[in-house]
Image (cartoon, rainbow, N blue to C red; front, top):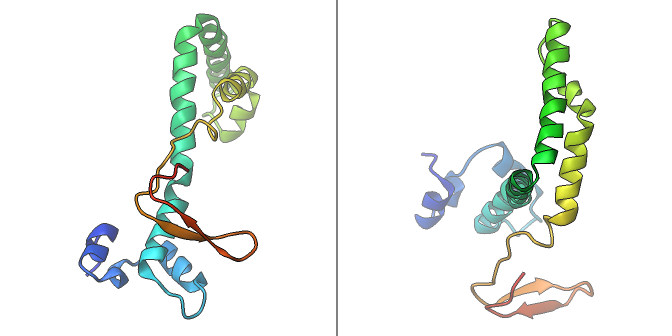
Length: 148
C-alpha cells in the first residue's frame, strides 16, 4: 500500500512511496546507488526549496506595506485600475494583466532589496556529522552544529 513518505521510511519500506516525482528521481539516480532515503530527501528539497524564500518575501512585503501607507495607496490604486479595466472590457482578469502592475513590481523589488530572501532565509544547522563531495572530488567532513 502507498503511505506517506515518513511512514514508509520509518517502517523500512520506502519503496511504497510512489508517484511521478519519486519515479523520476529514482530513474536518475546513479546506477548501483539507488538509496530510497536519498531519493526521498532529494524529492523534499525539490518540492520545498522555494517555500522559505517565498514565505520570507510575503512576510516582509506585508511588514513593509504596514509601515508605508503611501505604498499601500499607490498599489491599491494600481490594482483597482486593473480590475476596472477588465470590467470595462467585459472580461475576466488574465495572467497577462499582471505584467501591467508596475507599482507592484517596484514594491516587490524594493522589499527584496531591503530584505534579500536568500542571505536572510531560514538557516539550518547540521544535526550530525556528515561528509560532502568537495570541488576537487575529495570528501569534506561537516561537523554537527555547522550552520548552513
